[in-house]
Length: 115
Length: 112
Image (cartoon, one colour):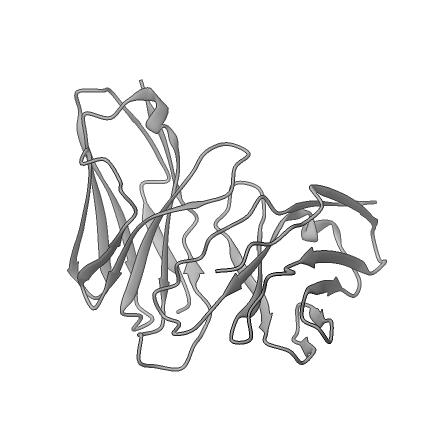
């Protein structure tokens, strides 16, 4: 199984809503990531988790709250978002830091629309 | 990580070899060159990576110049499914945190 599964595929939420994005992988990868991609732009890193601990936060606003409850799951909790937060949110995973390098695997993304 | 420069778009006829250039003139000795692609509305997909030797896998070949300041990704027999945005990325070890910094990439269109 070389898949990273993201749910939901599409999400429409109001600015006062609270929602969560979910990401799951069963490849034994211990590093997991959230990227944000606006239309016609390259993906931009948001967060990196290594061994279930947050290792990189690219100065993301606090209305985005990541969580890594176990080595296979990564969540992104959303609260009080703005319309400009509408984007494709991508999850990725890769091999452990102390292991041989392999490529990062990306999910298909969650397309988020904030209204 | 070193920055990369890629042409914004390219066309290639179906069945022909697609050659995608990347300039990374400030690359340092321990930095690797990676290529990913992103088909419309999908997540990026790893293609290939290399340090200084040419590399080949089932998807593509990577040619790195001797001075390592540029590289070319070659898709030997392009198909319509190869239409995508191709990203050239330069990274230094240690790996694993995968802080991939995507540039603007090259939008490759395969023409029937």
